[in-house]
Image (cartoon, rainbow, N blue to C red; front, side, top):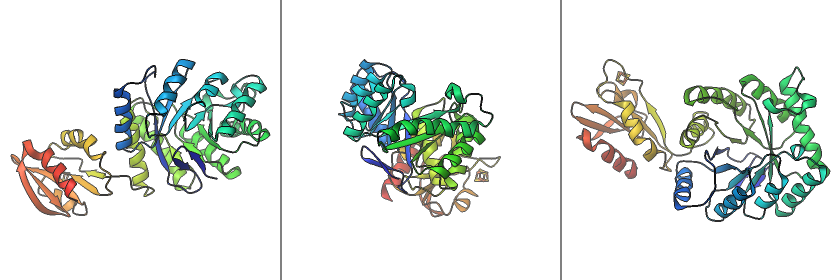
Length: 342
Ligand code: SF4
């Protein structure tokens, strides 16, 4: 069933959304933060979560939510007062587990306020922090689903259904099994990801294996590729997964050759230089960055736009046909101009 999260609709067959999490404490709002959120939006982030450890952070996040278009999510552990304070502001979603709040009346206050304000909750089940009663369970995936059901029991008591679930583990198979089990029993939207997935390469690999195998089974509605790396790379990785699976067209798709002994163009440096330019472009096109003029344009002839080197100059080609030749120094500028022309 679809759940409205600010301006986004998650679940119910709507496009799978891309999200990330702010990586620093939020104490005060300034233009740097607002500009950064605008930039994250430009490169494809659709939902942004913040850890909210205290009332001061709730105040700061609340003010921020009123100043940016991006739907913002408050991530709260244990303290029901922080959740209540966040809901005084236009927060798009609260990530909190009612079962972790403590006394039943505290959970009741949070759920009733969320219900009154039409703010959805995200219930996050993590294999590493299961309730004590389930921690000895041999089948961790089943235990994760039982933990989700314990939270669901509390929500259903108050007729609260505006909820999104996540069932995450650092183990790929456990993450996949838990999400499949849950999706077979319930049709609440699922937030997918592998937790504590590791640094960039390892983290992308683990997340891709888990998330893509679930998405191929039509399980999952929003994804966060958790990495010990930048928010930008989390977003780029999430977009790449959705694009590679053919589930979303979110801007430019990049293909590039691995380079070899014939390479005459610094593919990696060009990709590093062009990365944040191309991810801001909202055009559903394919670009190619190739290492040599002999094979490059031919191997990438299906690309809408491509570039490779040739001596001291670079060749820019469209659908395999050379359209421009400029000096190496002008490569980035010329390439951007050609992207703009499409
Ligand atoms: S495009 Fe050229 S440089 Fe790149 S892998 Fe193919 S032959 Fe090597």
